[in-house]
Amino acid sequence: MPPEKLFTPGPTAVPWQVLETMSRPLIHHRTKEFREIHREAAENLKYVYRTSDPVVILTASGSGAMEAAVANLTRVGEKAIVIEVGKFSERWRELGEAYGLDLVVLKAEWGDPIDPDQVAKAFDENSGVGIVFVTHCETSTGVLQDVKTIARIAHEKGALIAVDGITSLCAQNVQTDDWGLDAVIGGSQKGFMTPPGLSFISLSENARERMEAGRHPVYYFDLIKAVKALEKNDTPYTPAHTVIIALNEALRMIKEEGLENVIRRHTRNAKATRAAVKALGLKLFSAMPCNATTAAVPPDGTADKIRNHMVERYGVRIAGGQGPVKGKIIRLGHLGYYHETDMYTMISALEGTLVDLGLSDTPGQGIEALLRSFAED
Ligand SMILES: *Cc1c(COP(=O)(O)O)cnc(C)c1O
Image (cartoon, rainbow, N blue to C red; front, side, top):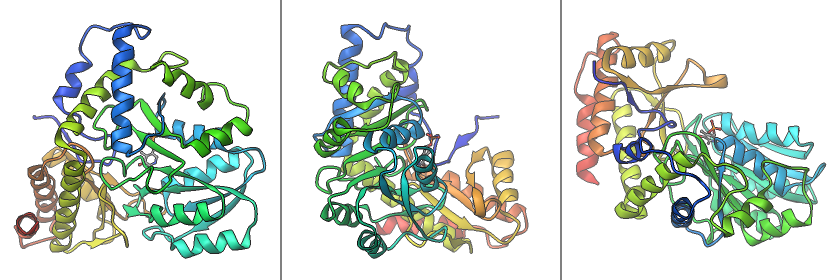
């Protein structure tokens, strides 16, 4: 049997050029050779982030950089706004609780984004908010948040904004400098088409000043130390340098394709997938769909059956629902290294599954919708 194909919004497919770098004999991390690779990777991260701020590479999955943001950019008891619209934004709240922050939690139904007016209202009703924590693309529901407007509101009130961009970086327009995002978090196993193990965090001048002025006790996730080391193309501790070497290759590929083209490819794939899903008679779950994943609602009680059948019969692995939508939605991934022809693989597996399970008797509609969508674009 050919290997299973990943169509999950993390981990995502890794190109062979990236995998190949990981099979080379190990080098030492305190060498000129590795420092040069680290320098290039950190520089190219700035290109993807569209920033001139330092972007620190941490050896930890995405949640590690989220914890680093909370620990370094806040103090005990500090007031913070958390926007909670799904599983990953819930993590911001849980981190805020773990670090003893005074939280103002703004919630929306799963599948909906928050209206930025609600953020403005929360600022009016609560004085002394130091920071806003927001998830750009809520991967559990496929919802995109209007981070640009929320950043403007936060800055008008003198607050910082920390953005989980883990599934928006590479897939959406993320303007770290132009929108004034104080900290943006990324993860290697998402749009960066690299295996898991690394996370990234950019730090604006205001963010760096804030952490110098006082923060929680930190050790491993000390971002002041990490920024100082980065200035020397170094890390405070042993990094997962095999993964950084892989990341460097992936970033070279992104740069060669051109960030604009990479984002356009994601936009086309996402749009075509949504068209196919609708043509197949499934409802879209997200009121504001992002480019990383398409969340769809199949008939009651069939979501997990569909998902299992797709992987067992067709070798195509997609994701399911989490939390309150567990067993209710399927999530089709188009984040990372996917050509439009890969969308045919994913949609034909979904379409075949619907036919196999007796949920459709008009085969071809999903594929036709893909064809039409790609032809229009
Ligand atoms: C994947 C993901 C994370 C991080 O998860 P890790 O398992 O710690 O890498 C955080 N936020 C979002 C939006 C994600 O998609």
